[in-house]
Length: 135
Image (cartoon, rainbow, N blue to C red; front, side, top):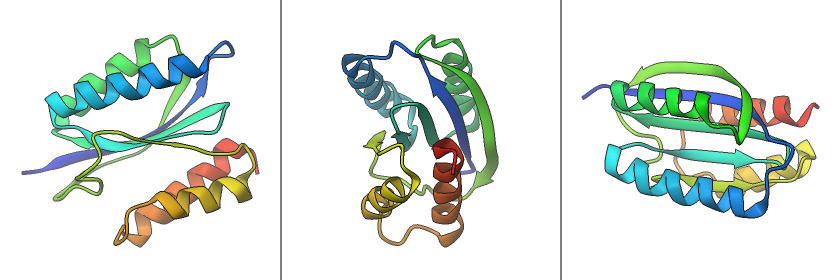
């Protein structure tokens, strides 16, 4: 079965509250579990960085819902490709909150990423963290 993997960044709404972030995480876990989507959501207080994976139609539908979500803007797809296996098979949606400081964020992310993660994906997540940190 081919899976689609998609990475995007976006800008959080200025008035995003902690309870909004919890709602995003809870809803993502619940809906993703039903739709067979797995992934990682990184939030640094200003930007989101998300990697999602699943059936191509499920990912396309999710991206359309994300584009309409007013809790963020400027959704920019950074990578999109087909994959043979999941990178995050045990995470319907793992939320990692990081510092806006790239160096602190990098350490937090490296500590949380699953062991055995492909080096190419790990490096992409680190590069995108640098992009959203403005470093």
